[in-house]
Length: 581
Image: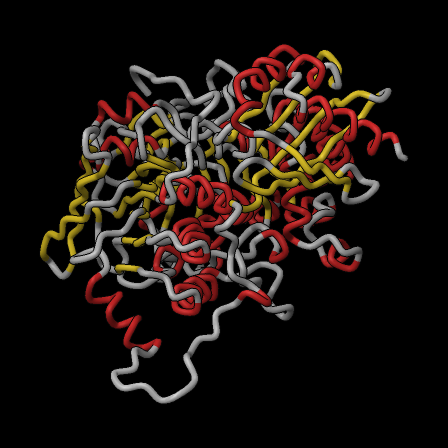
């Protein structure tokens, strides 16, 4: 019996006899247990033996974990609870656990139909008044959300919303997606023409339907839009286009939402039990209010409104900001012959796309050749607690910094202010903490280093009728000003659709509480309010990048299915009620 098998057998025995202290003694003092729904009906990490013991004392009687079996020699195992089946992973040091990861994979009696349990699709024989697949889909279109209410309403029909809807469909949860755009995928189609995904294809699959193996490594945005639209059709999702959500309110007594959606120019009231805001990781566009901007006679808009560089040849363009969108837009304008100045107001974390790809071994062609599927990669990544990720990221960041030293030297010589994060832990850590502050270089950095895109590192003092004036006195003549200045928190959607009171009660969305810039404490150890119960009953947030949306949609769907089926879901470690976001 291996050391891992011995540990698991002893740990399982302690759990099965309900001895929380004995189970906790299997961990080192400064250990971590990350649970995705299986023990806590929550997404939460417990740090330290005392916190682990406290959780077990509160939850063991309900969870009744059993049937632990080691999967392989790499620390992976399976287990069961009173209501479901799970998967876990343990890391050991001197015979005790440093990290434990547990995740609910399915609910007993409510498994997804797949393979041998797939539906027949038809009933063979001859029947009068046969109801065909087309008849059922037509009835859904006419009734669902109107005479028949969804259990879940998903606001936002991008990759996050439709991935979750597909998960819910597979386990029989009635869910309706509403989106303001005319067609699924339009959130991508309406962006500037040169936009491509900055993450590689192996990282970006949607649930159940991976990209074909000829798909380009970096997906162009219109191709992505068409894929999302096809996904909605193939997965038979109930999806309303051109249906902006206008308002939502929760009736505590009835346990349901009243949501007003505009459809075909008329208000429609929907009464779901659960409301999921899948409006992307960000909130509303943030546009700085510079003195004099109202007098500017040229064109000015936020990056979210920028459609491309066409028509700006020979024109003077100022891009305010220095993160992904700012670089992409500046490069696009340059490609169309514009005179472009990038205005950097704070240091930016830059890493070349190729360098990042080399250091993402779990999501690659090489990983697939070794049998590391996307799902395996997702679970390996999820098994490392967020508290340990900065230390794990430091060597990679240092290696990239060393390998690309010439690249960074040229950028800095051009006047570009580079950071690698407050603790030099790189792009992944910064993304989880604040979701901003970085650029994955796909070409614009070379234009900045060579001077093809001009660079100014200064704050704006004011805007005149025809220019941007900086604090150092420099005047930049401008025909176009693009504010690539980011977005607010997803919490803003709750404020706009429901009420500021609810938004304040829920508190911040995203970030870990690291105490670094734009991620104030206290430390929570998990993305705030994402994919798990919030302080507002029956309100959920879903989003993140494509990989996160894919992976965590499973666990949000299981939480919603349990509630549909009346399974008790006592939440342990629920996010606190806030008074202000």
